[in-house]
Image 1 (cartoon, one colour):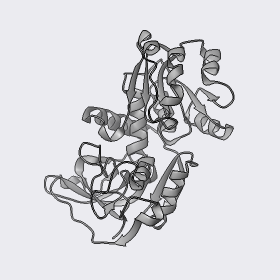
Image 2 (cartoon, helix red, strand yellow):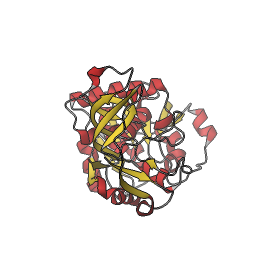
Image 3 (tube, one colour):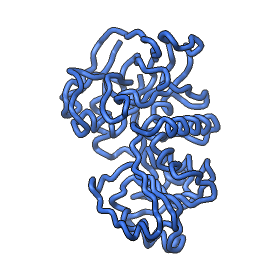
Image 4 (cartoon, helix red, strand yellow):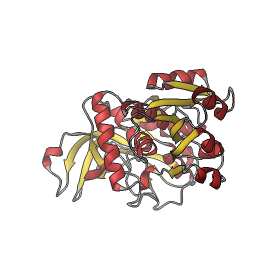
Length: 332
């Protein structure tokens, strides 16, 4: 089979190698998946670059997310799963989610523990299935960690991005009013198509001023935040008493200052989100909700670009450039 291996930390073209290798056989508790698509996430790119730790072996299969069909099962896995369409998550991570593991989805076949292969609803394509493990599960946790959002007003920053786009769809399906932020009219249209009730261009005027004009002070119940550092100071102004934040990135400042007392006075709750180390309960809740929404046609990840397996270096470079609006996948 063909598979992509990471051989060192560094640039995509220097460290990603497409090789012919033996097709593996599933061990106890494992399944063999004939891959149809592999997701290319920012975390995959950062891991390869060296930003998230050293190599764990001379070569390692890459990518966490993907989708395909189970072709064989190991001992302890019911044979009824053979032929099942599945989406994969957390494949390329250690058991605790904090480091790299030896498995990956950027190959014609992938071996994964059976519990990491989730049945993919017939209504969803393999391409969509490759965009769920990191983006959609992150969106779900960032949105739902503080409880139900039905009847609440949710702010989704970066509403046209891979996580933000899914967060808008999940929030609308869960009964929330959604306000999204974007940086251009083209991205505004994407957020509107996802279901956002209001879309604000944060480049037009200070976001806090736009939100106050729209809702009054303290009009937001919950924030799904792509850049906590950019918005930390305005949380006390825009959030209601006992409001909450699910933040999954902090690109503008990796060590943002915390305005403790303004946040404390309003009992604002902040939850950093790292999908790989989510609790088993949080993962189970996300999987159940995501599959229900996929089945109902209420969740459709946006794919910006598709690449061939042979073009994996270009796929990593496209993600690194930060110009994609949505997900990147490899079609296998």
